[in-house]
Length: 459
Ligand SMILES: Cc1ncc(COP(=O)(O)O)c(C=O)c1O
Image 1 (cartoon, rainbow, N blue to C red):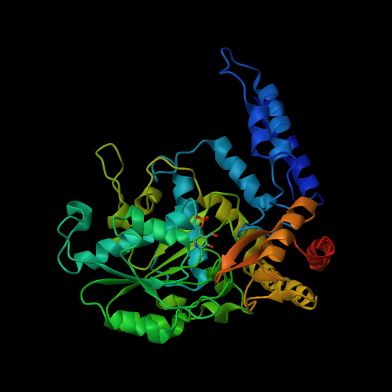
Image 2: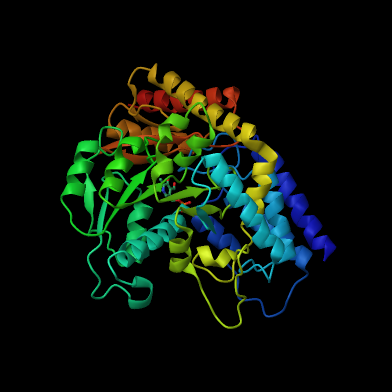
């Protein structure tokens, strides 16, 4: 028993020491990893310590170094050791964090982490927070609460009656909303195509005139979905201008702030997400800018009763929640669940308000620094205004950009992916790895420019 845990700790420690300096690319791809793991179903058991050794040996070559300082793919935090260690304890304790009787500490730590998060984000303190797997589920939970409350206001109980025969609920959202918002609408029976897409500006922010026109165009219950932190540009919708328009119309406003809501925890960039406090619900991730390990997201709803109505699971064998108590499962889709509050609690304790603000400010500063270095190179164009931590860059044309992304990935010094933005290929860089500093940012920009020069030299 002790040996298996000790070996896991030793392997993890060795991995993290290496990841701080290692290259970003895995040595083995999916096919190679599948071949490594592939084996017939074992008939008999094995020594658990040996199983952990084998697991490490088989997995290691196919792990991408997402915790290192030169990983810029998607929007992925670096799983800070304090959050990882707290999460190990969660696994070792084996708690089912569904309700406050089953695991009082698991429920209580969520209550405290919830208060800390609302304080950090400066959101209404009466709001409730569901600790979910990520922003995808956070969007889903918040939109479920919105659907229920907006239909309840026109006399329809969607939780009991479902959607057949319900009054129409209009959904208005920016044309550059994140794909997971559309997924949430799909899961909720609202349809990902049955929406009014509002025109956005060059950076992907919703245009106030277009938003006002969309609101004026619908009658009956409405749900407006805005965002703080566009996945490519990092742009935030002008929430302080948009939300009052929607509220005047009686619409529910949801803000997808998977990473961008964290701007509110950093005085230097808080203005980007100004006005978010006026919304009705917010989705955010801990496994992005707070650097918790996966899975860690927050579904935040101003109207805690609407939140609980959408998610509560009741049964005679489950405890009744008295005043002053809180069951974690009443704010998320699952009953049995991981005790997700501990990693958040540990990360906020470890960094503190000041440490979180410093890290976010540093990431945004390094994003501007890298963008400036890249933009100074002939043929390289930084496409976005770097207002947060996201950079999108073009290298010559589409072919040059794709070749540079390929070359960067082959070189393996950093990891960056690509996307299309406004019909053109771009390299995407998300500066969000907890430990990145000036030297690593400079080394990364140099690696990208070296790849671009090699692409040009190859013709
Ligand atoms: C704006 C936005 N919304 C939602 C998501 C989905 O978050 P997750 O992958 O944690 O579910 C992301 C992920 O990058 C995002 O950037």
